[in-house]
Length: 412
Image 1 (cartoon, rainbow, N blue to C red):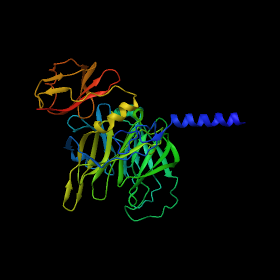
Image 2 (image 1 turned 120 degrees about the vertical axis):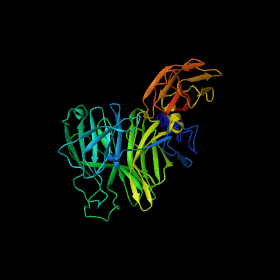
Image 3 (image 1 turned 135 degrees about the vertical axis):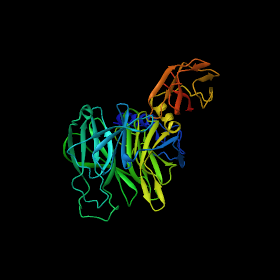
Image 4 (image 1 turned 180 degrees about the horizontal axis):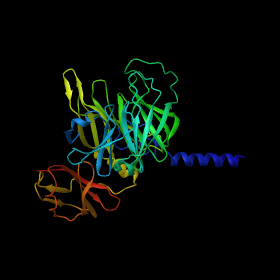
C-alpha cells in the first residue's frame, strides 16, 4: 500500500511539474515564462487601435449590420429595411451585386456568418422589448445564391435561461443579440446586454429545426457586442461593439480550448472611431479585419455608413507563431522598401542573416496579389497595374511562415 501511495504521489508531482498553469501570452502584463498551460488569467495594458483605411459606403447599405468574405466579394445586409444581400467590390467598396431573398421577412437582421455550404442570417435583434418569440436564423445554400432562386430554410430558437417574455422597456433586455459564428456542427450566439454591458454566448445546432439555445458562459465586455468573426484553425474570435457613448471597441479571444471561447486570452481594444456605431466584422486570416458601421444621426452627430480596414498583426502574430510551434526568432528591421509611396516599381533590400523567405503583397481585404521568393535587392515591377490606395507587404520565412517584416505600401 505504501508503495502504491508513493507511486501516486510521484505521478502527481510529475504531472504538476509538466502542467504549469498561468498566463502564456508574452504581450500580457502578467506573462509567466514558466507557464505551460494557459489558464485564461492574462491581463493587458489599455490599448487603442486605429484603422489604416476608411471609406464611405453607398446609401443602399446605410444600415449595414453584418459582413463576410465569399466568392471574391464582401457580403453585407441591412438590419430591418429590406431582404437583400449586397456584394461589394473589395477594392473600391462599391455594390456589384444585389441578391434579393424572396419570401422572407426582415424583422431585425443583425448578423451574417458562413460555413463551406451555407450563409446564416440572424433575425434575432430583440432590443425593442426583449419579448420576441420568433427568433430565428435563415440558412441559405451558397450555390443557389446567384441562380435567381435562393434555397433557404430556417432555424428557430429560444434562450435556455429566458423564462419571462413580458415586454420590457426599450434597450434594457439581456436577450438581444447581434453577433454569431458558425463551427463545424453548431451555431454560437453572443448577446448584447444593454444594462449589464456583458455578453453571454449560447450554442445550438446549425440544421433546420426548433431548439433551445444553451447558455455556455458570460463575460463583462464594458459595452454592447454587435459582431463576431471566427478562425477555427487559429483558435481565435474577435468581437466588435460600442459603448453608450458610441465609442467602438474590439474584444480579442484567443488560445482557448475547443469552443470554450472565454477560457483563453481576453483582450479589449479601444477602436479610434468616435461616434461610430460599429456593427460588423470579418477576417480571412485573423490578422487583417474589415469592419462596417451603420449611419448614425443623433443630435449633432451625423456619422455616415462606412467600411474600415484594420491590421492587428502586432497583437496576434506572436500568438499565431506560438500556436504553430515556431521557435525560429523573428529578425526585425533588416529589410527596407522604397520608394513608398510608389507609382510603378518598388525595391526591397535586406541586411544581416536572412533565412529563406517569401514576399507577399495583399490588398486591403487580405487577398494575396503577389507571392514570390525573396531575393536581396529584388525589384517588384508588376505593381503598376494596381489601383491607387493602400496595400500590405509582408516578408515571411518560408519554413513555417514566421513573420520577418511587414509594412504598409501606398500606391499613388
